[in-house]
Image 1 (spheres, each protein chain N blue to C red):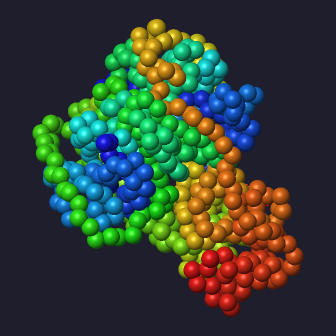
Image 2: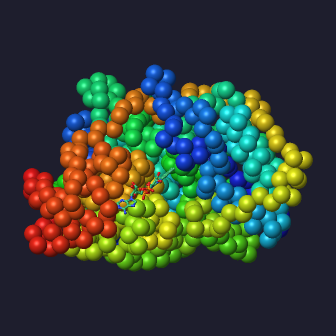
Image 3: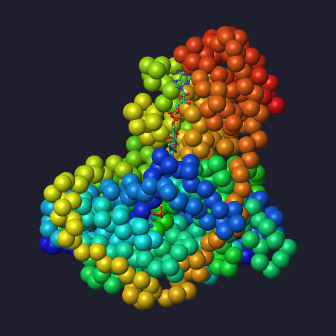
Amino acid sequence: MNEVWVIAEQRLGKLMSVSLELLGKGTELARQLKVGLAAVLLGDKVRALSRQLVCYGADRVYLGEDPRLRLYQSEVYADLVAKLVDTHKPGIVLIGATSIGRDLAPRIAAKLKTGLTAHCVELRIVNEDTEKPQLVQVVPGWGGSLMVNIACPVRRPQIATVSPGVMTKCDWEEREGEIITLAVDVQQELRVETLEMVHEERTGAALEEAEVVVAGGWGLLSAGGFELVEELAKVLGGAVAGTRPAVDSGWIPEHRMVGQSGKTVSPKLFISVGASGAPQFTAGFLKAKVVLAIDQNPNAPIFDVADIGLVGDLCDILPCLVTELKETGLRI
Amino acid sequence: MSLNIIVCVKQVPHPEHFSRITLDPIRQTISREGIPAVINPLDLHALEEALRIREELSGKVTAISMGPPQARCALEEALAIGADDAVLLCDKSFAGADTLATAYSLACGIKKLGRFALILCGNETIDSATGQVGPQLAEFLGIPHVTSVIQIAFEQGSSLIVRQALEEGYMKVRVKLPAMLAVAKGINQPRLPTVWAIMEAGSKEMQIWGASDIGATQDMIGLEGSPTHVTGIFERDTTRRREILEGPPRQIAKKAVNRLHELIAT
Ligand SMILES: Cc1cc2nc3c(=O)[nH]c(=O)nc-3n(C[C@H](O)[C@H](O)[C@H](O)COP(=O)(O)OP(=O)(O)OC[C@H]3O[C@@H](n4cnc5c(N)ncnc54)[C@H](O)[C@@H]3O)c2cc1C
Ligand SMILES: Nc1ncnc2c1ncn2[C@@H]1O[C@H](COP(=O)(O)O)[C@@H](O)[C@H]1O
């Protein structure tokens, strides 16, 4: 039977969290299809990471190690994965929509002349009891208020990329898996070669992992700045984010933007302050457990996607909220 | 060194009118009627980079687009900004293409154009935002690619050193020409067309090629050549509680925090 595959991504010897999240989803899909779940891992001296992949759900790991695979190399990585797919014919291949995953996935799909769907927010199987089970790939359609189902009916494998933070990883489970060592032969002269990876630390709590995210929008202009949002985030031990206009105005760095062209977050609590609720923005926090919104316009669309909506001037409401939270000590 | 540079530009709906775009639930296609169109913003950065390279090293910049007849306007704009010539791939049989079929069609058009050193694309479009066409095009042409490019420097010989942006930091990549680079926002500040350039643009050449002109195989283009299909469209499920609180700030803040305690706990 055709396996479900996750192309695992490691950077400088560390697995990206999205790969584990995809194993979580992959476990579900593989169970439904009654097939195995495998991870593909490429790098140099990364064997130890196989154990993590297995304990987070992979039944099998295809491991390719070579000093020349230490850093991501688009040509070699795409060749290796495409050849491996050709040999083993998995039915589904999942790839994290990181900057590297998005560089790799289209090249692989084009080599295999098969379909690729970007930034899926949901994946499920239909017709699982037939000859040709289908992967339904859900992506936010135009502007994000509509959802679009995409399928790759004929060609195989069905390839999808998923952003970090969209799927949930399984709990760690002590289990055994099969490690299959690949023969890696990187003799050819590379036409494109990654020479160096420069890591630049980002300041502040990572958005994808935060339990609380407080996002500010254009409405903060009248509030004279982002300090109110920062204060609220601080009381809750959360991370600060913003809408496109907040980024364009330089109030927060670009990597803190939430939405269709920014980050996807799934915290326990998402607070939106002075943001109207454009679908391109709200697409970024569909999976938050609870959403609280503050806006002075009672008709703002943000209230349609909120659990609790506070109507009023944020300059008045935010300080009250901070005081109240300090007093009651909400723990998240 | 004189370089032929090809810039891929796509015409997209003006982002401010996105909410007016509707999906035809029966034909499951997008209706963009009456919505003003622009060049995909990142493609302007790609064009700018091409013009800068031409200014530095001399060469020729060709803009190419696949789209309906009105995509002509996007190419006219590219000419006015500074491209030397332009090609529109336009044919009914291109319609309904996914990224693979689009990339194939563009590859056929580019092959017909002849020798080139560099292809520049935007890292992604604002309407489909897949960022897939560039790398897929490179695969069809059998050339290397780099995405998220924020800096390009020429090396001795025929290779480039580019910076590829990552979530945290960047990679330094050496790539041999001919190559496809997909550029990200930080790379440059696009110029606006000058009056002189707009006047000059009128005398520049724009070719319009159909599927047979570029030797494209029918089963590789349009809907037929697209492995992915839209199978359904539905309203987003907003199962939020929508409890709206109005009143004096102190009071509603207190109520909200109480509710938060309850909701987070469950
Ligand atoms: C292709 C595409 C991709 C995009 N991707 C993203 C994305 O990833 N993320 C994103 O955020 N945007 C994105 N956008 C932009 C998006 O469409 C909206 O323009 C943006 O989200 C609006 O930001 P905003 O809510 O901060 O501003 P506005 O829409 O201007 O809303 C400001 C809100 O603040 C309220 N307000 C003003 N003053 C006060 C006050 N004193 N107290 C309380 N409320 C107040 C107003 O009532 C209003 O509701 C994208 C757009 C396009 C076309
Ligand atoms: N129809 C098209 N015609 C020309 N170039 C295109 C077309 N579609 C995509 N591109 C190029 O590919 C890039 C990425 O597009 P996409 O994969 O749709 O996000 C764009 O920024 C363009 O440079």
